[in-house]
Image (tube, rainbow, N blue to C red; front, top):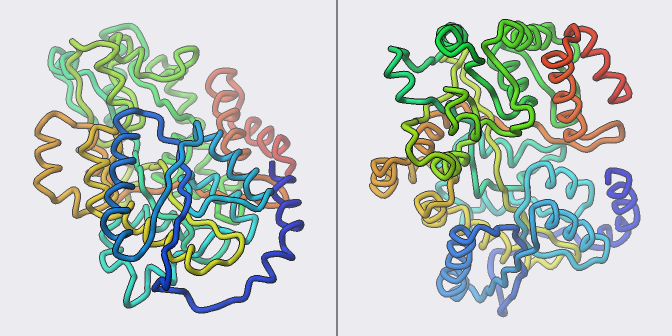
Length: 429
């Protein structure tokens, strides 16, 4: 795919260079219709999305002369493939959902619209832009190319799930540091004779623990800082020691810990906040709750976040459609839209402090949505995985290699130094 995108960039550069640079358009002289591609298949979420598009078309869109036509394009990977094909064919949508990983690939072309000039514009800008959590804003401006190319729209973070009844019956308290979590794990294993803790996302756990301990992962240009960082070896050894002691485990054939957790095999684990919707389906009688993940230093917290972002594409430089796309993105990331997504049962978190501070969100949390509560309590700690596509590798390839490295250390018993050398060989360094 990396090679294809490079060829796509070369093949289309001539067209992009014919597009005259100009000041951004902030008003329309005639009606504009734009295409919006998405991958939302969940019935509840899809209904919310369609309703938001309809509200935009009837409100701000009608006021400005903008009509948005939404189209479901399959799963996230299917949407990605269709956008890439559309870029090659010259008929890409005006706005699309994406992930930051996919956006980094699209940025190998010249057709992703820089939203920064619109956001900062005195007349049409986002006056409450800083209401969006800082970590989420940084992700949109954290690509190798200068500018702001995406905005967050559907966000989730990692949280600590724990079996409330088990903790209460055995006099345990929810850990807030890793020393506490390791000690709690030992107590649980002494009671059950089984591993007490797991983490769904092995590569994500490496990133999080690396940053929490003061290390560095990668840059948006593809610098592999962790390969020369002794803290990386400490993180690998931490995992290996706790697995060897029998108090931690990997998901293995279970794939995700929501199953073993719901079946009361593992009393606590770290997983995405959206997993909260699956646990009751697997065991409606389980008494469980959610807390922020442990930290090494509460003053310097880190919590991995991810989710959908939204971006604008322009292949012909049509300034009216660029502006129309921005106005739609502005609305879809507004407090109104984010409120609908957050309290509507989609499982996603607020992206804005104004939503967190609202009466609607307070009522939503009071109704028992603890995963969302624990997620936003960590908003100051949010960080995104750095994403990049360069001549040597991609962030996705690095993440896959990190996961393999973790498995080699944890499952196969490789020494951390050996596993790190294997990672470098795999990536061609």
